[in-house]
Image 1 (tube, one colour):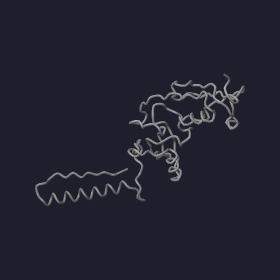
Image 2 (cartoon, one colour):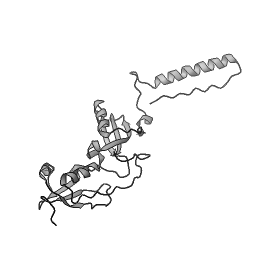
Image 3 (cartoon, one colour):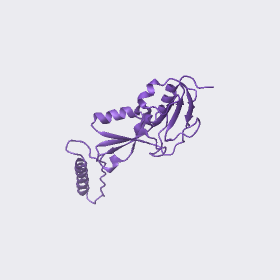
Image 4 (tube, helix red, strand yellow):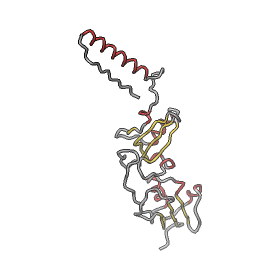
Length: 209
């Protein structure tokens, strides 16, 4: 909190009274400023410091912001700064940047509101943005397609991969997938806000003609 004190002194008739009044106002302002600081020189948490604060135009990368919170021995939470309500907290931090942050004194934590690095921050948290479109993944190598979905801020645990004639693969088995994406859901060009799942059907090699 930045303590801002304004001492207003109404003019009295006598000059001596005016001088005394100004001196008292300055002394009171100094006492008030001292009272707003804790004994160790740090500023206490107040409502104004807990409100969402816009970052400067450089915008910290989320991974760096998380690192700072951890080094300060603080907890943290992550949420989408837009009205898309994407599952940013379970996505890879390297794809996001911080637009707003809020100090939570009760939990000794910092709450980060984020957007993807290629996006602009909304004017205020929860601001409306255009829903992105699903990329074309059919015909792409599985590894490239998978990474493209991740770069859209989509969490890996919600990507379902069907390989060959089998069912959904476990995450531990994805390293053995070699082939082209033959079918995708959502389809290319469809709205891609926060779908329940992304499904990739991958051939063992090339897709059948």
